[in-house]
Image (cartoon, rainbow, N blue to C red; front, side, top):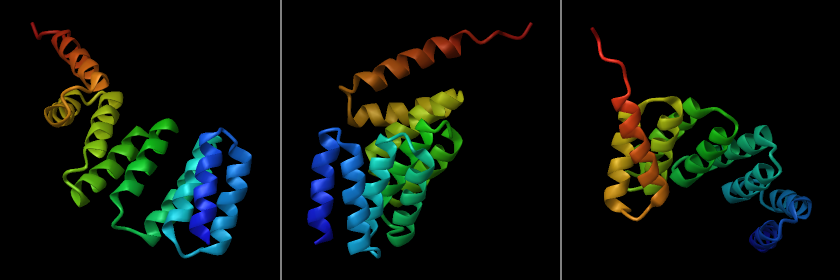
Length: 158
């Protein structure tokens, strides 16, 4: 039953009906409080509502119920980035990559988070690795292009 309510919540989210989606997400949690997916779903609604602390709390709960789900860590990292917590996002993304080395979404996000932190070498490494697997990603291509000029502008020592 919780799955049906969760599906309706997803439809409401896609329509931008966030308060209605939140009501369904709460109902799904009432129906299946031991299932990680219901907390993940409500976390997405809280993110839509820009209620980042509540979103992160729900992602924490989802991860505690399903600690091997790298996707939940990637979602939590994305919210941390939105909340201005890039270094914490890098930690989550590194854990996700350790659990699932082929997780390209985590690799891309970690590269972008590292770029936001000014860690140009690590960002370039992640983004180059990602771009070899996904060569047509324009966002990553632009980020890589931006890293090269930034690195060349560093002052030289006299």
